[in-house]
Image (tube, rainbow, N blue to C red; front, side, top):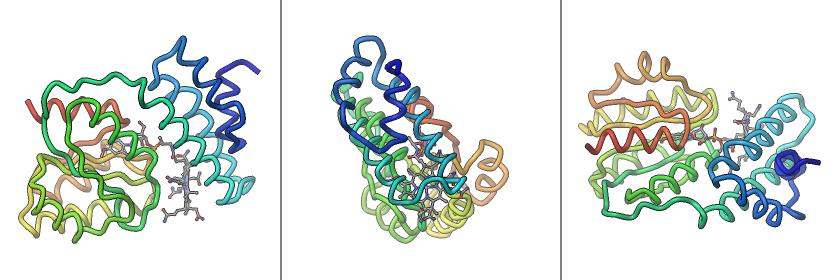
Length: 213
Ligand code: B1M
């Protein structure tokens, strides 16, 4: 198989045998993020499709997630770093009821490599915990991630709770369950502060940079 197809197949098959050598080979020609957003994401999309068709079980998807996480960890040291000065502090969380964290953790890496101090609250984070963290950390923005359809609705609830707690820092939202339109029509009106949608981790960095300027 060509290299890109091999990389996708490690994710689909949930195996790490030969993975790191192939990642090193890919690094000779591609930037770490290109490898993640290209062949590895292609593999993850295929996992999602097979899972949807009941051709994979949750345990197998977990193996695929392990391969993705190991790949990101392997590629991380090769990512561009811009550690000039601290640009701002951002709290990150996957919303209540949702365990998907690969995308959120990728956002953490990209932001942290580009001058942001990140407070990562993890997964299944209820609004109360975000409110408490914001009062403690006084972050410049709050980032919410969610991949389930119900997570989009949970973001609306979270935004309402933040508003009721008189928090109005910008909220950055992302994850497969969302679109820019949903963000504007559903979350925006529920919240006094800005609500901004990021389609991927690099978009998240661009938005954060604009916010801090
Ligand atoms: Co789940 N899962 N999963 N899963 N899973 C999806 C999301 C699903 C679409 C698969 C499918 O059916 N086709 C489906 C959702 C259906 C829906 O609601 N529409 C689904 C389901 C149903 C479930 C369960 C309910 C299955 C079950 O138990 N029966 C269950 C949910 C549990 C829960 O959350 N309560 C479940 C569980 C799991 C695993 C634990 C096995 C595993 C997650 C492991 C982990 O994260 N530690 C898993 C996985 C791996 C997936 C798929 C296959 C891949 C997700 C992923 O990691 N992608 C996914 C199908 C798919 O997406 N193709 C699926 C790679 C990652 C880098 O991309 O997270 O999208 P992503 O992040 C992107 C952007 O979205 C963006 O940047 C990243 C790229 O740069 N982004 C942000 C994300 N967050 C951001 C935040 C930002 C900015 C950008 O600012 C704050």
